[in-house]
Image 1 (cartoon, rainbow over the protein chains, first blue to last red):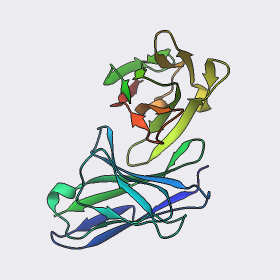
Image 2: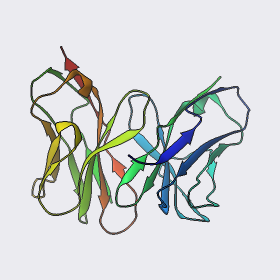
Image 3: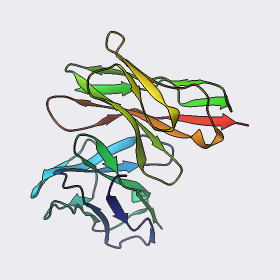
Length: 109
Length: 114
């Protein structure tokens, strides 16, 4: 069982609000990732980190930002949420294998 | 760079029948291969992985996959499916060298019919 957690699991919020999606793992993994996934669709890498103070943008352009101040914590922030941000956001961390959190399903009204 | 192709977007199959979900990949370097399952409103759960050694890999829930280097394939199989196997299945690759980016296929929706 992978020890990777995401909060909140579900979030409904109005346009223009600032939101932070939390992701934490207790496996001591250096490498962490954020994916965006629309229902029934493929995963798109939006951010990744190979360690503390290291963050990179992924293959899909995203208006979100991330930070990596501690190894176990990799939060994703949207400064001003829009309806186009409605999606599922999956956090993952990697040792030998990539493990996923349960996801945050975001709805922006 | 790597790419993954899952040719079947949906696979309907009757309960207790066998199933094969196809995955082909391309890569200029050697790769690790993975299959993940995703149930509704959940994250991805690792089913099995190929890192090295035997090309036939057994995973959880009775699934297995065979790595075929010459055909660049990693098809997932189960001899007898259950209703509870209904889910989305993703094949993924990662280069042994280079970046630690995982490349995912577009997914195959397995629907098991009673």
